[in-house]
Structure formats: C-alpha cells, structure tokens
Length: 281
Image (tube, rainbow, N blue to C red; front, side, top):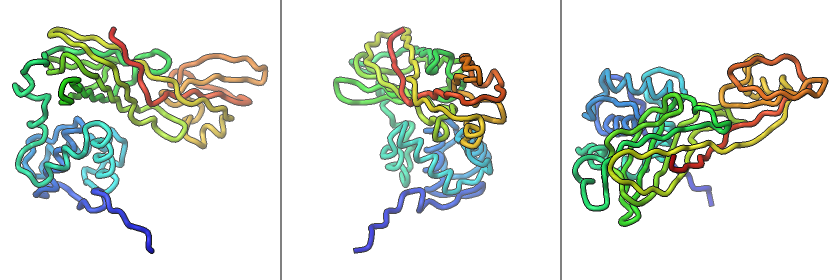
C-alpha cells in the first residue's frame, strides 16, 4: 500500500501579498498577532500594516525579508503558534468573523471573577551563564488549577527583563514561560526556551527569575567551528561560551560576542539549553 501523504496547513496555504483579501488574510493576521507583530485591524485585508508586520516577523525568525507570505513564512508562523499559543485556537477562527484575540480568557472583564486577580509581573531572564538574556520576545501562559482555564500574554525581553503590566492571572496555578532565543546552538539557533513554575498570586506585583539550563558541550577546531556556523571568522557567536585551549594547554573562560580568538588546537563550546529553571524572586 502506498505511503499516506499528509498535507499541512502550510502546504495548502496560498502565497499572500499586499492587496490580498479574504479568510486566509484574516488567519495570517491572527498568527501575526499571536507572534507579537501587530498587523493593525484584523479585517481580512492585506494592507500596509499587515505587510509591515510580515516584514518584522520575517526579520525576527529570521527569514528573507520580502513582505510576501510564502511557504517558509507560513511554516514559521504556524510553528510559533503551535509552540506558544495553541494552533487549534487560532485555526478555529480561520473562517469566522470574530478575532480570536478578543475571546481569550486573559482579556477583559471575563477574567475578573473569583479565583483570578490583576497583577504586574516582572521576570528576570538569565542565560545559562547567569547573564542578562539577549533582547528578544517572550510569551507567558497562566493556567488555573481550579478549572484549567488559561490566560496568554506576550511582550519583549529587554536587558534581561520581561515585564507585563496589569494582567489577569489565576491566584493558584502554573506560570509557563516561553522565550524565543537568538542564541547559536550546535544544530542552528536554539529556538524557544521554556519553563514552568507553580504560581500563587495576589493583586499587586509578582517577581520571578528564569535561568536558562546549560545545553550541549562540544569540542572542535576553529576551522570546524567556522564551517558549522559556530563562529564568524574568529569571533564566537552570541549565546555560546567557549574554553580556548591553546598549544600550551592554557584554558581561559571568555564570553562570546565580546572577544576574538586566535589560532588554537581546539575549542570547547558550551551552548545554552532549551529549558528554564523558574523560581519566585
């Protein structure tokens, strides 16, 4: 029997560009909103604001910045939604008239009920060497223990700090943090780094710390490291720490992105992991 052929949404989605209209444009706008790149009004019309959001998302991934939603862009948008928001919620709004982002539990008075409260949250985000995490974008999902309802929020990580102001959260539940990582890994970018912590909130201010776990450690010559994309010339990529082992076997600890390196017998690279250890501050 022939192998089953499985088509994904990205396989069937049309190429979209400025001037397009219809349900696929609405779906695109919802995915862009989910990714933190606002397309303006979610109105099924691919206008200037939507094109600007597409370009911003493509630069963030990164992809070739064209403003045209081709298959790689669809795949990245859908992958982001599956990881951070739950694609089923967004997909269900594909042909509907209501914006999914106005029906979330986490928005508006719908959350203002028993067992929920309004807080300002700050989370110090550190990399695996306890340094401020590179500037990027983060999502938080707050899930209640009582009835499994959830609230989703997003915002930038700036100088290692992720802040959310006046958000609705359950008083008891879990805090799920997802941070997009621009760091270099052994197989490319690290991607999303995530972690979960138990939460107990009261109205006011809540503080957490999230420290990235350490990932893989690999040893390579400078030539190998450059061929694998771990180095640009003699500079190690951001997000990677290295022990430089010279011919005299002297070992020095250096921070990537701030130092250049000369010839060496070998270098041991330590990469960031894809998990966070989260605790109340």
